[in-house]
Length: 262
Image (cartoon, rainbow, N blue to C red; front, side, top):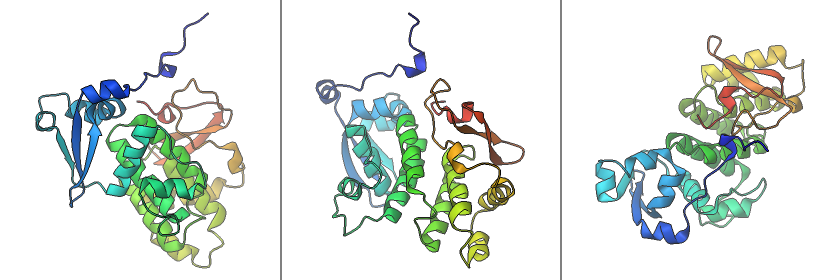
C-alpha cells in the first residue's frame, strides 16, 4: 500500500498537558494594547510567525510578550477562538460568531459584521503564516456572497480592505468580483460604486463582464486547497502575473497558487 502523501499528513496539536508545561505568552493587540494570555505551544504550532518569534534569540522570546500594534482585536479574537477549537462557526451561525466576540447576536452580529470579521481575520492569518486558518477563512468568506449581502458602503469598504492587504493571486479576491458582477450590476448606482473601488477590482470586473456569459459560476472553485492532491472537479484559479487578473483553468486542475501551504 502506498504511503499517504506528505502534505496530507497533519501533525497533531500539543496536548493540554504539554502546552501547560511550555508556559504562557502575553499578546498585546492594537494601539490600546488589549491583552491575551495564550499557551506558547499552541501559538508556535499554529503560526510560523510565532514559531520564529518565540523560539529565537528575540526580545519577544525572552520577555514572553508580543505586541501586534496594527492588528484589530476583532481579527485576533477569531485567531484565538480557532486556535483552541480548531473550527469556525458554520454558515448562518450568527450566535456562534457572536460568542467569539462575547456579545449578544442581536447586539452586534449581522452578515455584514461576519464578512468583515472574516476578511480581517484572513489578513491576520496570512500575516501570521497560519495557513490552515487562512484556508478555512477563505472558504467561510465565499459562503456569504459578500457583495450581494452588503449595502454599497460596506461593500466598498470590504473590497478596499481586501485588496489593500491580500496577495493578488488569492482566490478570496476573485470571488467578490464575480459576486459583484452577478448581483450588483443591476444597481442604479453601479457605475458610481465601481468608481470608488480599487483599480485592480475594476480591471477584474471588466474582464469578468467580457467572459461572464461563457460559463456559470457553479463550475468555478474559489477555495484554497491544502495541496494539488485534493480532489475537486471544478475549474480552479490561476493568477496571470502579466495581466494582473485571475483566470480559471481546466476542470480538476488545481494550480500551485491554490495549494496554499507554500
